[in-house]
Picture 1 (cartoon, rainbow, N blue to C red):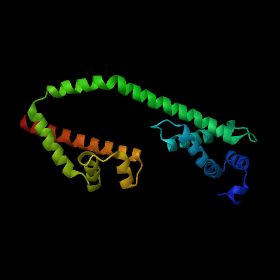
Picture 2: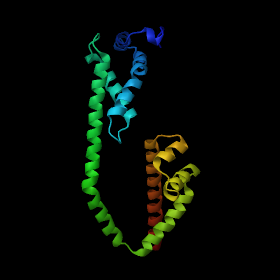
Picture 3: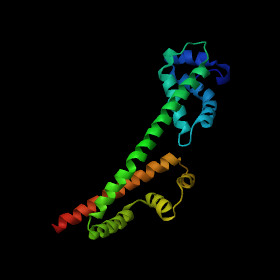
Picture 4: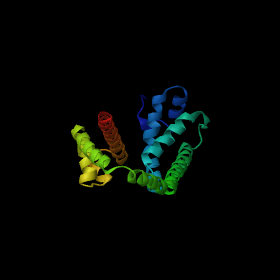
Length: 197
């Protein structure tokens, strides 16, 4: 790391060191600007945008394009401009996802309902029994997540608080657990149907 106290080194000096190959000097720049950048993003970001992700993307973009920065100019202005574009990109992406879901979700739901309607009731009983057995195979922490979300109907924010994780980490964990359960159910149903044939 740098020998001087971080506050004694100018941003341009840190950037000069980074350009000379001392990449760890960029850590000083990140520490110097991350709080103000995150605060700015929190004020300007619409709901649903992960401010920490956008800030990280901005720092990565600035680091990767550092050779475009003119030493002696206003680094903070450049960083915040890059962050503004990162925020626009993320907002556009989220709008597209929301638009896609709005347009196609009803159609997909209708198809799934038609598919389910055509399945014999015995298959639903088999699935319910398979789900019960698959739930028993889950590790205790995964079962706790399922209980919180589906038995106690605890909001994601509360789950995140209880387990000391971010909401996005909780969403990802639930997705993984549901995938595992789906795979387990399909495997059991296939084994049952294979045994009957």
